[in-house]
Length: 381
Image (cartoon, rainbow, N blue to C red):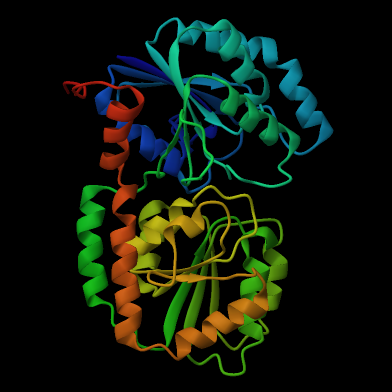
């Protein structure tokens, strides 16, 4: 069986001429590849230097099909989605002729016309992955339209979270991010952690107010006694980084900004941290970093955006609700008063929660629940 995947995943060419892309997505495809004869990945190729979080395809049966980048915040960017539509649709149509099934990853700028196009003009078997907040209120028009299209068509859709009113063709799916070896390593890491103060905290994601960076810094700055915090690590980048660094200098707590890091380096910080901070108000689906952190014993301190509250509760973490710095300060004080034994129990519960976020679990569900195959295909090496 041959698969076409259509996404907005950013790709680049490194100094050696190798095509690389956004690491979490590329890892997902590398693990899915053995179950298909060929995977064609249609996505955007950018002329910029790739960030450290980028990864190459390690599976030799994945063929990258480049699209000219389109979409963005400006009016010019949005106009480019329309002007590039004919060329984009031709590439997609030509690629679909080569495959048995497709997956479209939404929401994305081209999804506004691609979902109706496939619904009306293609009989090819396929499914959609909606990676955003399925219940986002006041969603941008493009996102809202794509959600509406997905609710009204017959192909299967995978979404984040389990909702009382979700249509029958919409399937609750976890975002895969862990290997079997990483799961095994996680048990060893958690057993070695003592959860004794002072604690190390980490944040992984875009550095912006919506993700909670400002709330974290303000909450730490407002603590009367921050001695229970050993250090805070911020992994990621964003335009407000200079402002965040300036604010961090006012704190007595050591705060480190690492920029983008490779997957292994991010995991090393998880391993030495007791808590993962993500008090976000951004439009999240379910951020993979939460599952990754829990796998290595990071107790999540998160908001209740989208499906996050479907997985995180008082038994395995902390919900910052309302999502403001004052509430985060209360969570910090609660942590300070909680015994190491109780914290370790939360961490172990979090590790158990992360069990469904493995690549193996995801692939099995794609084969059986989405493609409805009796036996999975295993490509010969």
